[in-house]
Image (cartoon, rainbow, N blue to C red; front, top):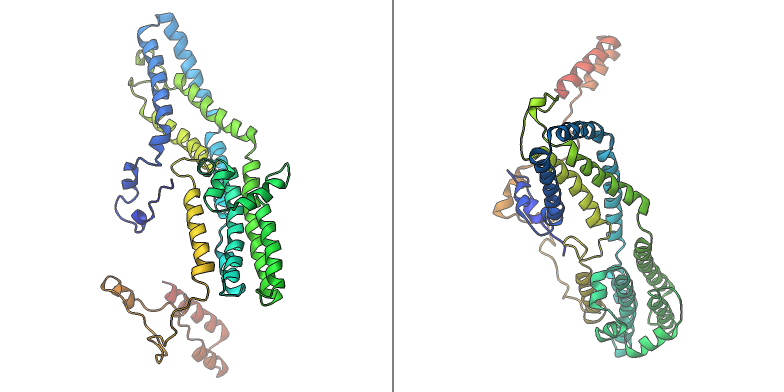
Length: 401
């Protein structure tokens, strides 16, 4: 679902961003074209009514109303309201992404901390890792519509291999009126305690580190749940939405082209298409659409988070790390720079220009101030301190320019 264009803007070049305007998936055109067409249709209907269906007295009244609306439409602080709101939404959006629980730190701790290459050791590591993955799945299933559609019932969770049937019975036998995503984390801590008592975890420091990583993982699950429960205050969203739509409802009348023959100030030109009003609608309404897209990134829009991909990636990688890769090391041998005190990795032909650049030593590395000789002259009485300060300022100025 995420639209990635990072490689296309890796280097600044002529019309680099302009080429992105041709994209459709995830674009502003895709999310705004219906509102844009509706606004233009209403504007056209009012314009046709004014030009062809109103009598002269009605036209004069409409013209006064249009001028009145145009004069007072600017009182709505669109830039301030939208700018502050979208900034708040974007910060919240990124914080939600950083709250997604990732198993990488837990799997590395398990792989190095839970000992045993036998079946029991393998079972312990896989079960502990699966409990962490199950907790992440349960919370993502609670906040993401895409994940819930993939795992609509606990039967689907069991069939996917995140939970055994016995674990499901135990899970459903624990009655709580609240979301139970945290239960697999408690199973994890209980099993970790058993593992420590059996000596599979070699010392208390490793055991402590494992529980700390789990608590950090569980904390991110909790943050996702609270982000889902605590939204941007509804009154603020309503104020911003009303401000945008009220402004453009007023513009439907206030931005009409009036009869130039009436001599109204600013109405010397009569056009049929309000170019700049349409651009203003595109920018302001598009700004609101940005907030609408980002306020809940766990949906199914083009730019929402790839939650199902994350579930697949995390489960496969974590299981591989704690099972197949346990104790699996490549053969240790001397590296190619073993006897070289100044290793210089090679460059390809496309990157040879980097070799011509000198190593950066600091912004003042090449600044030369001849203070030593002047100080010797001062000590010898050959120059006064006032002349010394003057010379120093001149040298600094020359070096600066």
